[in-house]
Image (cartoon, rainbow, N blue to C red; front, side):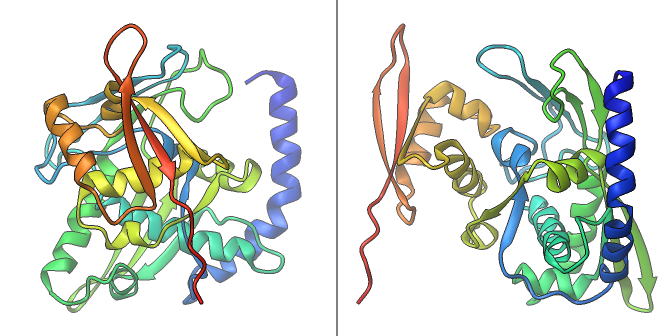
Length: 285
C-alpha cells in the first residue's frame, strides 16, 4: 500500500468510527433477517469444498487470464471448510448486514449469537448432533487458509489469510454464545464496495453441495443478464469438483428445481460450453 492509499484508508476509518461504534452496540441483539446474504468474492470463486467427504487436498484456481488466483489449504486435523459450513458464515454475514442497515451503523467487525439462534436460522434444531456439527463447522471455517489476490485491486499482491476467527463462550450444556470476527477483507468489501449480495434462501435449505454452489455462482455470473456461458471445465474448477468431467456434467444436468435452463454447445478449440438461461417468470394470479 502506497502513502496515498494509506492516507485515504486512515481518513475513511476515521469517518467510519462513529458508525462502527454504533454497530458494535447492536451486534448482541437478536436481529430479524430481511434477507440472506453472502460476500461477492465468496460467491464468485471456489473458497470451499462441495463434497461431503472431508477434503484434505488444496484447491488451486486461476482465472482464465491468469491475473487472479486462489489457493485454499485445508487444516491437517479438521480438513477444508465445506459448503455446508459456509451456511454458518452466510448467517453471520446476513446478521452483520442487517446491523449495517440500521440507522447510524455500518458493517460490524464481528457478530455474536447463540448456537440455537444460528441453528434455528439454518433449520437445524431438530437434533443435538447439529450442535456438534456447528462446532466442527466453525473449526473448519476458522482453520482453512487462503493464499492469493482475489480481494485486492493490486494483482501482484499475494496474501495468506483466514476468513474469520471464532470465540466460543461456554455454558453448562456446551456452547452458549459464539463470536465470529470477520477478516478485514470481508469488512472492506461490505463497507466500501457493496460486496454483500442478497442470495436465494433455498441455498441454505439445499442438501446437495454442488447445487448449493451453482445457485450462488450462476446468479453472480449472470449479473443483470438473462444468461451466462462458461466452459464446462472452467465451471468444474469453479465448483471445486474433484470427480470426472462426465460425472460432473451428469450431475448438473440432473438438477430440476432451479430458476434456469441449461444448454451445452461445442467450444472453440475443443471441449464444451455450458449456458445457463434464466427462466421466464410466469406471473401468479
